[in-house]
Amino acid sequence: MRMRPEPAYTHGQPARTGILWINLGTPEAPTPAALRRYLGQFLSDPRVVELPRALWWPILHGIILNVRPRKSAAKYATIWTPEGSPLKVWTERQAKLLQGLLGERGHHVTVRWAMRYGEPAIARELEALKAAGCTRILILPAYPQYCAATTASVFDEVWRWAGGLRWVPELRFVNHYHDDAGYIGALAARVRAHWAEHGRPERLVMSFHGMPARTLQLGDPYHCECRKTGRLLAEALELPPEQAVVTFQSRFGKAKWLQPYTEPTLVELARQGVGRVDVVCPGFTADCIETLEEIDQEARAAFLSAGGREFHCIPCLNDDLGWLRALADLAERHLAGWPTRTPHDPAAAEATRQRARALGAAM
Ligand SMILES: C=CC1=C(C)c2cc3[nH]c(cc4nc(cc5[nH]c(cc1n2)c(C)c5CCC(=O)O)C(CCC(=O)O)=C4C)c(C)c3C=C
Ligand SMILES: [Fe+2]
Ligand SMILES: [Fe+2]
Image 1 (tube, helix red, strand yellow):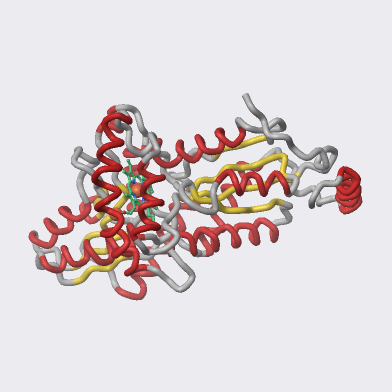
Image 2 (cartoon, rainbow, N blue to C red):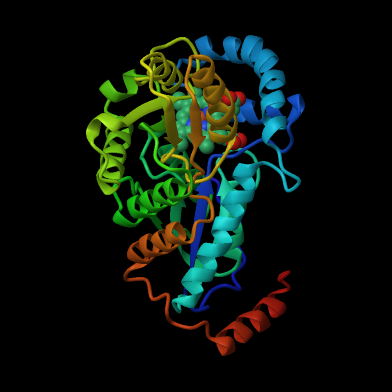
């Protein structure tokens, strides 16, 4: 194994703790070129498309990366903000707020954020935490439901980075929080706030990102965790089971995906005479193309043209304070045993800086 040389000036520095908040990633711009780069990286991940390379490569490079970037870019253009892609804007803001909340609680931790695909890359942010003296790092994916395609792929990337290090920090990984009481409570409060302003729907559709159906048979807990989140949210809202529906969106490719599918379910509800539906996407902790375009634009149009009267897309958790407090609670539980309330020692830090200067290191 080849290990990169590492600066010795961090030796003896008091242990610092870092948290890396990680989301999926998003294109740099709503353009075909940026989408080709993003989709190329995303769809080359063997955790995402589990086909043999010899079979998948010609399809990806011959068809998908020639057709999809233009179509997807046009969709991204409809949701783009002056600050960039919504997913990136929210993810960054969540990290800042988490840092603030943990600081208020007296924790000396450094929170940074990263994207699994594109920038800021996981390796770059882990490197930054290490350079800041973090010898303990909590890996916190922005996915409440565990899925091999998302959560495990984040872990792969962390291990890849650690594999090239001489001094590997202590690492902890948050696997999932689909049934966390704080997360469910924040979702329920979000839905209730919407209802307080807009009245109640006839059905609450809880739409999660889909996955190929075979991953359920192969042992991925994702489907079960989505169903459980859906059940707990319906219970928290005291909804009778017939008013709450769990569905799966964003089908990709020709294979069978987890069912029921979101859009056909909404069309069927409209045809049955359901006038108003509200859709909430509990698997997305931040609004993104999947919620702002696929649900709020495409699914809305499908429901209304099938005879539905009123369609509400409830915003994701984003920068909701109740949610961020729940996230801070979750982080605190996972940090247990790491002495994060020990203040940073200025004298030791100065000694480290002097040592670095003596070693000629750039600080
Ligand atoms: C929240 C969990 C997610 C799972 C599980 C997931 C699986 C999965 N996704 C694709 C293909 C695409 N997903 C796309 C966007 C996208 N996916 C998630 C989350 C999950 N994906 C998010 C948060 C986003 C939004 C990104 C953004 O920029 O806003 C896209 C890109 C958009 C498009 O071109 O349609 C694709 C493609 C597969 C194949 C898959 C599981 C096998
Ligand atoms: Fe996806
Ligand atoms: Fe989509």
